[in-house]
Length: 555
Image 1: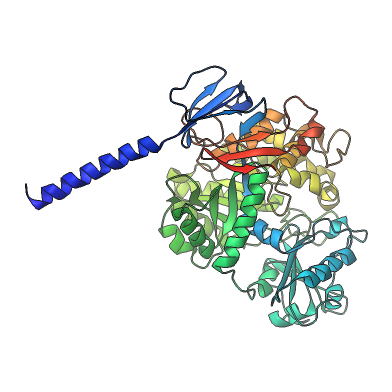
Image 2 (image 1 turned 135 degrees about the vertical axis):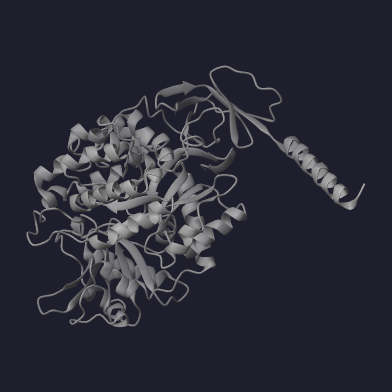
């Protein structure tokens, strides 16, 4: 036998031994005595009493069945089991960063927010060159006015302070930060952005949408150690909430490379469906590299997040008619209209999914028109593109989502957070096409639900509660806000499981608990199908399993 044949034979023997070794290592787990709920592939709710999985795949599920050679048997003691929940729109490292930096959510006034900045600085053991935070929302303050640099200047004069609004579409900064960015009374805001100035023409310390970049481009890019810390913080938080998969809405090339290395090192503990940022300077090269999918399904990169307009709270959402409370303002287009054809053709032509941020009715209409135009050029890639948020839509445009096959990727808690100002911004008539979940479903749309964390809290049970009740945490208003757009609990669960998976081309492996699918599931402390809807929000997660492994256990 020559050497070539020997090498070939050795390769075959090695492969066979490796296969036998893997089979011998495979473990089978049976979890019995569960109060289980899942959907099937048609979206129908089914119940079960036990589930078995081998390694990462479900091999049996139902009320009664026998499995040979069970390695691990667990009695769930009647606890409720659900499929792992999927957040179809979040910002993973932004969440981690927010958990590690100044937390301004819930601050009741500008002064309270400034006090939190002061407290954070005094508590830090290590000096930092930049003071970063997020979460303020002037709509909730008595004045409802934007904050100014003056309150931050009293605290910090020699370092830049950069505080993102809760929706990430505006930043509040001090004078030092403006100085570093070279922003003065003579600075002209870039297209798609605004520099708020006072009556005398001086910058107040508020930069909106594209104007943020004048400053944020100066913030040092996070190194691997910082990215690790952010990912670890986000991972622990999301797993504790029952989220087994998150769609990361807009990542840079450096973060994409970071994620790919984590997947290669088998160092991801929940699934990430990452959208490349259309604004990354190297987006063309990333598209040329094609799709990314790791063997265990922890990382998928096959989509691009593009940016249409700003947010409703900061009056940056692009509207067809002026704001009802600001008659000279139509909002902002973050990406210029004339740039849209090239953007859509580049992404869709590269066989990537395009997920387009559009909140206002003008931004949504522009996106729908551009999808229709681009599909004529690339008919082979017109499936499952998304509009992220799809918040305020001209009623006559809603059927176009179904006609063009566009998935509305929507966040239920945005409605309950925005209801205190939405009618002020757009008036009662335009609300008929706003946060219109049931309207979409009745027309046949598949909605991918998420939270937009850290803009909203990541807890998916807050989202389920908001979707079913359209009420705040204290269950107001009494019948829900625009109650005709409520969804059933089945519909809400589908948005956070099966249809979220569908929106990521993953419905054959994720989203439901069925034979052959991944063993991603959670155990919770209550039966959400047997309690008042008002109690869904307070659900606690007891265990979170991903890929057949216990990743979180409540203490």
